[in-house]
Amino acid sequence: MRGGRSITRICDTAAREFRRPKITSSGANYCNLLNIQIVTSKENTTAAKTTAATQLSTSKFLKLKLQIAHLNVRSVKERNHLIQLRELIREKNYDVLAISESWLNSTTTNAEVEIAGYKITRLDRTKKVGGGVCVYTRSSLKVKRLKEMSVTSETGFQQLWVQIQLEKLRSIVLCVAYRPDYCPVSCFADDFIEKYSQALTFGKNIIVAADLNCDMLKPRSPEAVALQDLCDSVNLTQLIKEPTHVTETSSTLIDVIMTSSIDLVERSGVLKSHISDHYLVYALLKLKISKPPPSYVKVRSYKNYDSQCFISDLERVPWNEVFLVDDASDMVDRFSKRFLEVLDSHAPVKSVKVKHRHCPFVNEEIKVLMRDRDRLLKRALCTGLPVDWELYRDSR
Image 1 (spheres, rainbow, N blue to C red):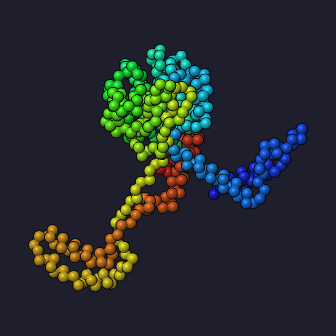
Image 2: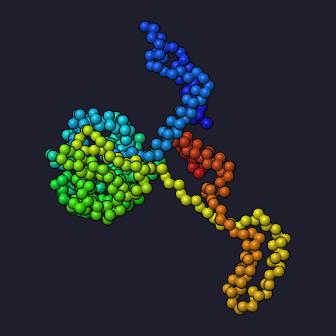
Image 3: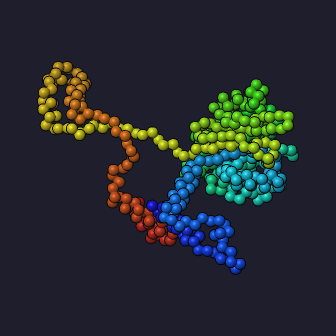
């Protein structure tokens, strides 16, 4: 395999380089200084190749998953908070980091709060105190802001909606929300459900990462009841089970991650953070496209079929009984029944799993023509000449 040869060359080159003592002007041997173990034996070289291949396989496997986290930061533009955020996202390697209480407004540019390798999508605060949500997404992800759904209500409830896709895997819809403590819980029914219903029309799995100021550790409190009623009414599952806001006098669960599909989540939990007085909540999502169930078709098996025996059995059928009825439909039914009974005994029906769907009429000659067509299109796009476009059109 090409990848295998590439890994082999890398390992062999590295081994040769480390075998050469790198002497500086002072005579220091960097191999000794860095305590680098030099691969000398064939057995160790094989082990190095295996390790490199395993790391490549693991990297490819991790790409099938999406790590989402949420944190109430209480000001992203606070220099100390931003530095810690950058270190956190580098250390934990999150794909998506949702932020509530960003405290951002129009006076702060994206460049002032950027994180290398990530894009930021914002819904700034409208009041002078608290509020504001945003989401940092890895630059390799395709992100689309759903503008019509991203709003701040008159009561202060904020919801930022984005659609996220990792490579060619299935996409998700993410909502980052914040409900201030002065905002009534009626905002769930008045504001959130309407936007959530719009999100359902995309046919995607939905993740909600939010600070809703509803203590789920007190299930009988009015706020917790309202949030649980919301989850029950729209079929959302709340994943977080541990306290997310701990002080000297209280321990509450007010930061949540909710999902419309529990099968999408591999694991979730809480991570202690010192950026603010809130803990970080996270979820690891499995985005690999589910393997479709196998397809089966019914076919006749002619493995043990003998045409002469089949004809002999047909000759022994009392076909005259077919004409003992007057109705033509009944005659057809009788004929079909007797014929199929004989056929089933010689060529029984069985179910066969279809491994892949193919087009039997697309032979190698047609495939060559299709490749020529693609080549002509590429040349026409490159040159822009009318003659090349004419050749392409003729090949279609």
